[in-house]
Every structure is written in C-alpha cells, then in structure tokens.
Image (cartoon, rainbow, N blue to C red; front, side, top):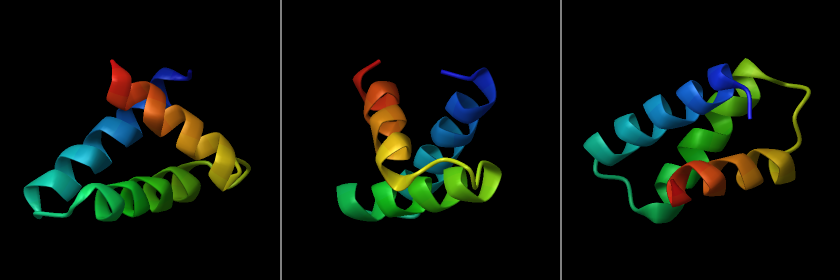
Length: 56
C-alpha cells in the first residue's frame, strides 16, 4: 500500500472516530477521503485498503 494512502486512511479514521461516527460512518468518511485523494481508485479497492489498515 502506498504510504500516502495509508496516511489518508489513518487521518480520516481518527477524524471520524473523534466526531463520534460509528463503524459505517467511519468507513464512509474514509472512502470519501481516499477517493478525493486518489480518484482513480475504485470503492472496492479503497475498502480493501481500509480493512488492511484496520487490521494492523
């Protein structure tokens, strides 16, 4: 995984958690952030990366 994308995911997750979002809300916010940073990625590709970060 690109370090930049991992950073985007971690920042977006932290922000969503701080805002009190539930798991789904966190996921939606992270997907939006990643797709804004890398519009060439698909939602499916993004979700794979988000799940990898969550498992770490």
